[in-house]
Image 1 (cartoon, one colour):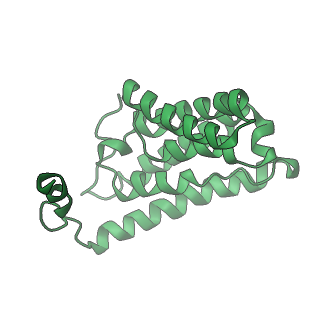
Image 2 (tube, rainbow, N blue to C red):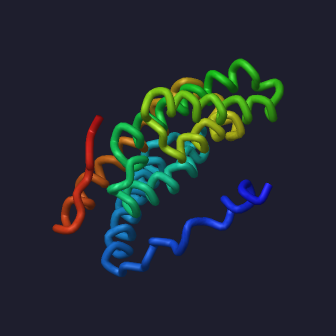
Length: 179
């Protein structure tokens, strides 16, 4: 037991020091990326679609703009994780939607397992799968269209902005790898 609980002490101090320059570039990236996705959702979505700007994009912004060198921030993970998780979420809702608590658990668990198996692990993908299950009737009405828009389109917009913004400063490079 001592060994088990000893693991919870951690391994020392956090390496996350505040860097104003990194914070500024992360801020600019998030404003541009989320701003563009939100603007497009507002101006291109029909009023009957409801709010289709999904919350998991906020978490993707943290990774793509706040930690662009991280392995979970890379294009394969960003786009693949969202799209795969959206597919899982929609399929799970269609199969298990009559039991929402089970659908939620199965969607997230399956999305995580498939992201692991395909090398596309992106933590916001779990939320994308969950949104497909717990989202509004407008989200459910999209069916597999949810995978294309908002999910696929939004992930590609976040990626495009990350490619532009993260390569402006000399001290950043994005992506570290494509595949």
